[in-house]
Length: 254
Length: 321
Ligand SMILES: Nc1ncnc2c1ncn2[C@@H]1O[C@H](COP(=O)(O)OP(=O)(O)OP(=O)(O)O)[C@@H](O)[C@H]1O
Ligand SMILES: [Mg+2]
Image 1 (tube, chains in turn orange, yellow):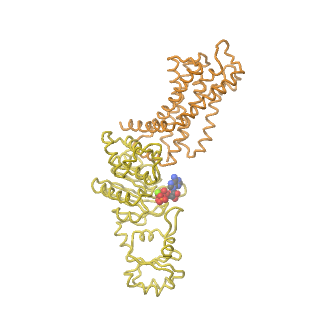
Image 2 (cartoon, each protein chain N blue to C red; image 1 turned 180 degrees about the vertical axis):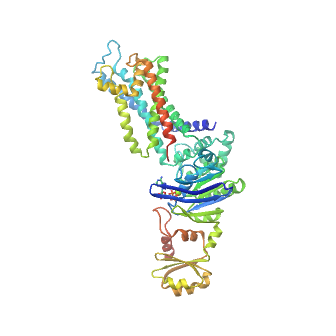
């Protein structure tokens, strides 16, 4: 009971802050929309996708990738908030409370995932309304499941980094070394099929690729790895990151 | 058995020994003060007792639970008001209290009543629904105090709780702290730089310097320990040998140009001291305060940049009056 209340407390805080910081929501939506509108239209007008006869535009093609990108950039940030809490004694207030570190970790993950899911749902509605994304009830549910797993993984990565570091600048530096490779090597912006072997190896080793591929499969009906493989890899990634994250939190020092 | 027991409690940060072989026994319902210059190790001591930091060596127990092995049980029974801001300033005051109540498993039916009560205590009832971003420093401090009291802990750690508070709030708070310890038998460990506060609030206090306890007793006994009135002189070339020979001079201490004497019945003997010591720039004589005890045990050099200025500066200010 105590731990459950604590979990709710930590979630409550994240959610309240999210509600108050309207700019956070706005900025998290503007970036993906710019990618879709400018990059999607611009590059789409001059390239051939090589998925013949599918009738999928480049803009539609990168849409699943852009959803994943939103998750990547939005979720990692939760590690930053940990560092900000450490800077003031708010972190001590939480750490001296009679809650286990596991609860603390899951509270943060749930709080972050709630915020992120709201962003993604807004992007899904916008996608269906303005970008011709053919969502069905089934594909929307699978999309949300894959997104949720990816979100939990990336929030965990952020929290792991945040628990290890004390400087905001350091976090910024390390996170860009994490985020950009994960994004560019995920096949978010290009089809995976005709890649040279060395690049394909990187893409295949990147768990985010499977999230992108899974989304593309359910939303657009085109993919490379197969949906079961996609879901298993994304699920495995999430479990691994959560385990490492709870461990990292149990070792976190003030 | 003592509620708090520390044995050889030690904390090292790399080369620096912040707390060195501390031994403490604090009884139930006691208000216990920790005094010491900046960087003496007060916060570090409280952090170890509250399980936020693991000791490098030694051990301690709080409410009978070992701070290293039974950290979670210790945390259930303590409350902490931190030295630095520790609330979320995007949330309102009441929301911060609500969070705290949830984290400490306060019964939700009682929580609302309890929140009203502590908010009234620190006089923030009409500000409770404003975001803490809009609070003044003192209001924020008061809210964090209220928060520490919310879950009625058996042991309460207060790290400079009255820093930056106005005199009204401070007096209110003293009253409340006393009431907590007398009526509810809450054990309170408080650090402060206000000697007057320590004097009137604490049953016993320890003065620590460089991580070690240099004195530990009731405020009254500590003052008695000095063994007479305090005479402070500002003088360039004191003839200390001559002064030491006077039988009513109990202690002599020199810090640069400042000479501090402990003298029996100073009113009667001041003339004679002045005759022996040489050309004095300024002189001051009074019954000892806790401040004198503090300076006596910790010297007058300034430890860090912060703080309210050393003895020397204050003496000059006084001398100029
Ligand atoms: N996390 C840390 N890493 C390294 N050194 C530390 C750390 N925390 C404290 N110290 C050092 O330990 C010593 C004791 O610090 P502490 O905060 O306990 O002092 P304090 O008595 O509370 O002082 P103040 O009156 O200024 O609050 C100081 O020299 C400080 O620089
Ligand atoms: Mg301190």
